[in-house]
Length: 280
View 1 (cartoon, rainbow, N blue to C red):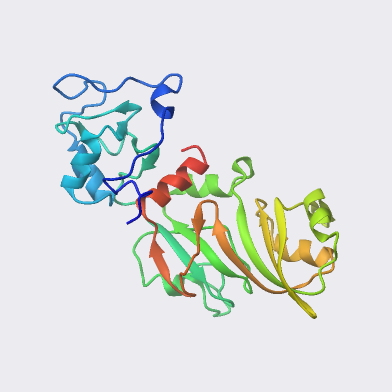
View 2: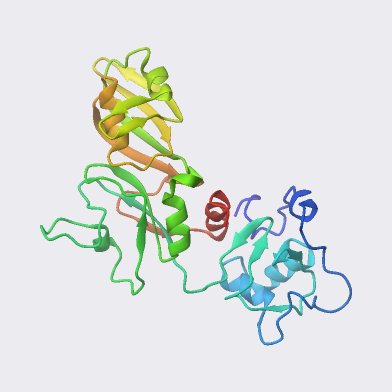
């Protein structure tokens, strides 16, 4: 566990911030639970945090005692506080914590020649083949085409899924592309300025040449557009057709060392970062 993980008792977040922000409620004071966040019939706050994966109840009690937990905008420090996790929002170190135990958040490293779909009439392998018959109805976030590899998010949180793919929030996605070289010197400038495609103008947020050998190059592309095969079409338009394409990051979530075909649960702070990216 690293020092940036909210589960770590040694972690301190720099936050003048949520407490000072206009409209925020004051820190809880006194010897009893604050009436405007306390729900007598609710669940103890430390249990909610523990169930959300932030550590043992004792560790979660420490988070509360240190003033690092907010409920509906109020910093709660009393261990006797009960809340309704279905109706109230909880933040730890400014990151929203998912208190709904029925919510699922997964990161999948999609291999090449796997369809981003839950079924295929042609019998091709799909994402569903890697879910091991999970009972939840999951949505994939950010479709990858059949030949493209890399990070795909899956969840049953419909609101988060919709926001992550909505153009309004401009969540960036990072790709590594092996392309046919050499890469034209003006490729990055053209891609940043915008390319006219058959379905309108498109541009990248950033473009970097990482490596180059005779006839081949490795480039990094960051963009927030989710249009069909957009990276392939943009790179082909500047004379560098894609030979291999891997999505390495979606917003704050990175693929890192996750192997192809492997699925993992997102950590609580990763879910919080995703929600923060789309104003949840």
